[in-house]
Picture 1: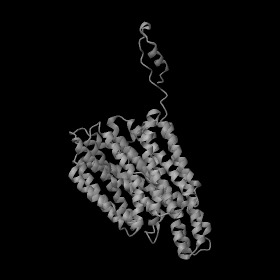
Picture 2: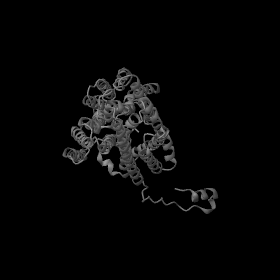
Picture 3: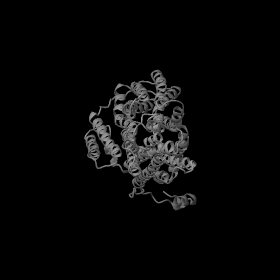
Picture 4: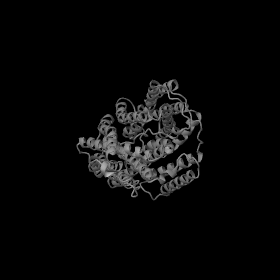
Length: 547
């Protein structure tokens, strides 16, 4: 599974004190349609890059990117998105949400063009970071415009519509990438964003009102710097461990420790602010904390698995990008199907029962990939992704609803900010952990097969299975190609077990954190009924109705 785009949740701007007159229904639908179109960029970009991993790693067809560079191509986007989202919301409050939408769209489009024509992996990583900054302006402004456009009764349906189209974007992203890669060069997966941006800019300028909060939020530069530095240092340490194949190097453990320390300072700093961008106080509530930590592990597991699965299909199994995207399509469709089913089941039973069981099933699906090899019937892969995607859909929707529903209305904006941040943090850690585990195990597995080979061949073969196959094809060394496939499969098996472990941790956290409260309020005393007026039907119903 690939990383999912951010769920359309109301941000802090939704809790503005003033409530303007809502537009007529026709105008509301038009504005919602424009916002759905604008968000299409975020939804497609959440899955489109994973399909291009194999091509970008190829020295001839792509950039010859190493696993670490591909991790950063994804991680830089998610890191900028996670850390700048608070700033994007505050800028919308101050300068108007339509203006922020326009700025975010323009920034995203310009960065997409730069990414399409990047000549080196470093240029691609930089462009992806700017794309993340554009997304951080787009998402909070979109949620705020919906909150200002629809009244309290209409907002749930509007957010539900946005969620439904997010699932469509999830499913369409890999297929679109497969078609583009089969027809054009790898840069087309980014260049396709440009016409969408141009149309979106025109629609937004024409139809979206420039609403803004009557009380602008203060910017939080200290929180921005600390969160970015902390998550960045932590991600660098984890990704560097994969490149060095060791956690013992000072730059690895030093960066990791520094990242954890900076995140701790960030939390302490936010606790001292009256109205922080990220409010850690909310995590003192058991259900809110458990739900958000569960969602963080879900996104961590999803992005971790997406890293090695792209290489399994297009590398070891030699499927084209289009065929690989079609094979993974059942997983995306499963997410769409699982969400409404879970909401209904949770209403009849409980979120704890439905989602913890579903997450356990998802973990088993992720772990089952440890049984796959180069000859496994490919139909099993699509079946596993279908089950896994459906199970994940049965976790995200009801848990998100329960998490935000556990807070009073006046705290929903702050809760949404914490929820979005922890999701994106899970994605950052997932791509770092998944790629690093795969890289370390691959290097240790292939080392024994490189004895006697020339130093340049050995060095390239140790970087990744893609470079090893490239060298093997150039030197006509079939033994090296087979060794690379074997080493990668072993690395994928280990990574699959770790990914399943991440998901199982989330299932345990959810089951414990969502347990019913032991103390229940005593029922209010009622006067004894008059026996002469007591009817047998209601009396029996009272005796046998379960509270």
